[in-house]
Length: 155
Image 1 (tube, helix red, strand yellow):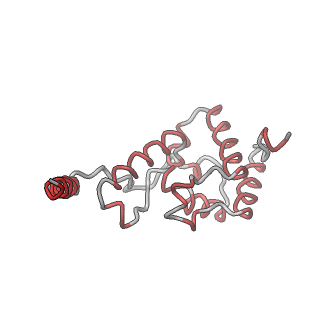
Image 2: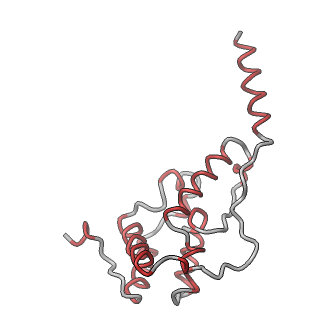
Image 3: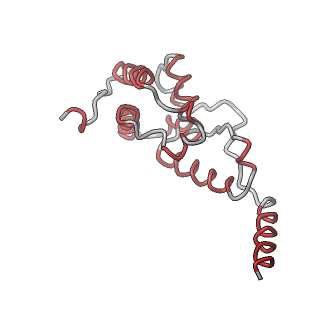
């Protein structure tokens, strides 16, 4: 009986390898990217691309294990959800209020350390936002007129 269960699970996993989610990889330049909306210093853009764009843009750099199912589906869902919250590649399409809200949210996320998610950092420890990264991003946001302090840290 145990042998049959193992065989069925192995067969299901083998079949799953042929059912793959779509890749989040844009072919062309992204005209609605945040860097085309606001003057973004190169060092800020590098931090955003290296530490945020995998889940929050139209162009993900996929690790090798994304080709193994069901991990690929988990990543697909994670990226879809991340882009639903904030998509740097579509930033120009946001209303002015939403842009401001998202910029404030970026400041909170890097200041309070809730982005990137711990589940992402397990496999991508190089994506951790350092205090220097946070300071760099918040300085840029302040130059845009966005407060670098969240409500919880201002109290």
